[in-house]
Length: 500
Image 1 (cartoon, one colour):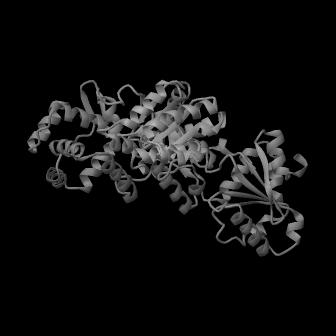
Image 2 (cartoon, helix red, strand yellow):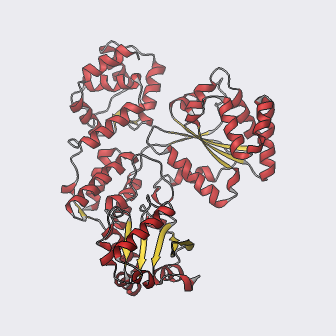
Image 3 (tube, rainbow, N blue to C red):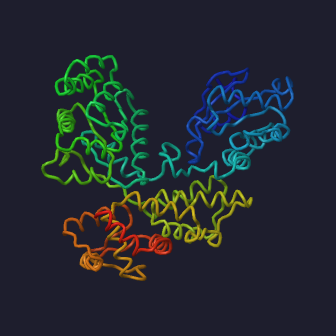
């Protein structure tokens, strides 16, 4: 294929070992993909490259060529990807004609290609070209709203290794919303499907499944849809266990189920448990492995002696990033975006402390910084340029929304009670006895088990951390923002009115 490649791709493929493949020819343009996932940016393992040859440049005006490139992008459904275009001529002329493609298209002309080909740091040179044309906030891997995999997945190496190295064990990944459970399951799915037959790896979003029938129907549809009519003719208690064993034998391997948002299935099954018992039996027989992700309901059932979830799976709790994981999430993309961080340790430590190591908040923080750099046309972060998170409305809203979504009234009441009893709680530890006294002073008396469970939820949520017998608020930013934004006495009364 080397003779059919543009010189730039030939260099990266033959000399630097990047994976390059030809996709197809569209409207007369050869289209390739290159694996740039190792850069840990919003560039994937199949970053598209469109080759504009000299003959293409001579066949029409720059405007016509750009319109043609836009049609190629529409034809291949690449509008949401960053697309590289190698141009065997002057790219600047065409660059000025871009309109709606300005934030997703990188034009690499003959002069730019020559710079890369003659450079002693060709990867760095190409990165310079790309980051010079795409807003760095758009090029960054930071994502605060959707799950990520591959090049944009950071941290959790220990959890992934633990799951993948124990194929005979079921796993229950427990964590609050936005902590990265779905991303972890999707990354495991990606790795498994790359390493082995993807047909026996099944990902299910359980929040969409409203009954046992829904679950079984979806499994049959994914594994062997031709058997759906049979499912309608038989009761699933007779059909489903046999179906799972047959599918396992057909694949000559265990079926691996990745069950996301398992809490919904737990709620649906309470009082019956027939389906969960079937899943457990299929795992005991060696036909299936289950890797589940959930939060409150899954965590509760893990410890109920009369629940089929008890000892069904090994618990893996997703907590905040360590300081080292946070450092990698902050610095690796910044370096690849050509953003210099002055006084790196001070910058990393401050971001880590103010986000309490929560990966979603770290990404939100970094995204705000990059957008500001784009606006100012700068490429350097210093301690002085860090945002004042106490006054940034977007960050405050993100922080408080995470707390409200991850807690119920019982946990909220506990937090409000403590903060009302301590005007400045920063760095101060408190015991369960103090928590109990704070609640009682507000007129709430909770059983010890309820206080234990509420503390466990707040520990998992990253609101509290524990050292011996004392608890501490993890983030001084959280407590200060909460106190500045709300009347805590009013919030406490509201949760009492609504019920603990």
